[in-house]
Image 1 (cartoon, one colour):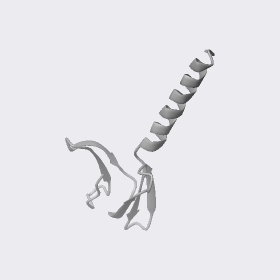
Image 2: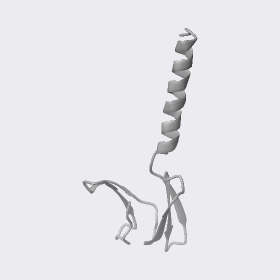
Image 3: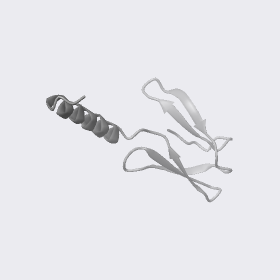
Length: 85
């Protein structure tokens, strides 16, 4: 994700490593001054010269996804061990 003060005041999401453009995020009416990624890696906050903060839910929480898959597998194995379908 990048923001360069483009004429549309957008943020651009890129696919890595090919660096092909995925999408542009529009919402600020003046240039984007700052971006910050949330600690869980799912949300980007952008601050614009228009004196607004915008929150963009961009990415999946891989840890939650991994935990859900582990829980599902554990449940499946437990039910198999108990001969419950």
